[in-house]
Length: 462
Picture 1 (cartoon, one colour):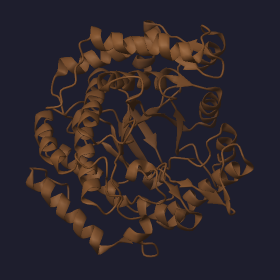
Picture 2: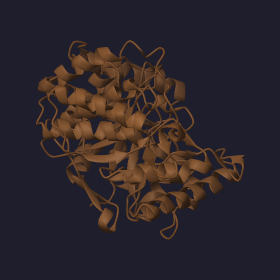
Picture 3: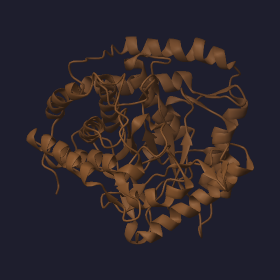
């Protein structure tokens, strides 16, 4: 179980009393120059020929650069314009006292996630995730039921309820709070209806503000302490009082706090710098966000994905750095460009699962489809492909070099399609919403792509 958070009062005081700086100066004079400095000093270089690197010294350099960046830059609180700075001894203390297991869920649905190492033969956890995808009230419960009935799902994230009572759930409006409450109630209803009342649920995506998160916390009908709650890192290495209020409430409520962090490749840094920022963001999650675990989704600024050649390299190296030098529990959250019921999305999902599992991710948090921006364009089949294929990589005892060869064979099947990816079909077009069964068209496509991965040497668990 999680240990108490690291000196939470001291953290909050630093948001009030840290060094004062303008936001533009933090980005321009502190953040960007130090990203470039640590990348150069630690000689971190992207190798497009090897999307899954096997260089332990490179992974250690990425870790050291991430620690250097976090200790030098700190976290910028946008509400107060203060830098929250920490010493090396404080970071070491927090890392030493961090747990290496996390208990989630309850009853027969209780699960334990464990920190993993590079090329670990222990299976990663699996969290099935339509998180962030907009969903109608009509299909919300049925979509979640389809995800929750998946046997591999240790837990399930939830889509965003686009409207409630006929109105958009706009942030800071009363309908946001109403939407958050309904979201939590519907999620619990879905869990009961599939016979998994104790399944841990990531809540509450519709409620972005701290006030609405508080409103949806209720052990009887809403978010419970056994569920998963998220506190974001504002890209890059920033936070605000809304997020700190969430963290404080979740800690008081007794919930499992996850740091939600998605460094942007193409914003402040190149691919090497974004990789280092990813490690530093995990450290912010530990020290500032009060996180018990991390949901990590580095994304391409243009395509909003992490399944391209450079993004798979970033994902692999980030996890090698974390797994080789810490016991932080982190979930690798996949983002695909293509939509459901397409070859491309299943290739993307499979590779993201393989790379994450072999590189040491503790949890396969899979997978956002169609750039996570189209209404109801996601299904459990993409998550199933990613998780089954990631577990197959573990079951097959793949080394990084083996995974690298598989990635190099599969990437050419889709990496020239990012500018015009197939959007595929929506959830109601891929599933019978009443019976919760996928269409035979999608299942046949799924079975065919899975056979292709089997032909590359993967041994699926069933």
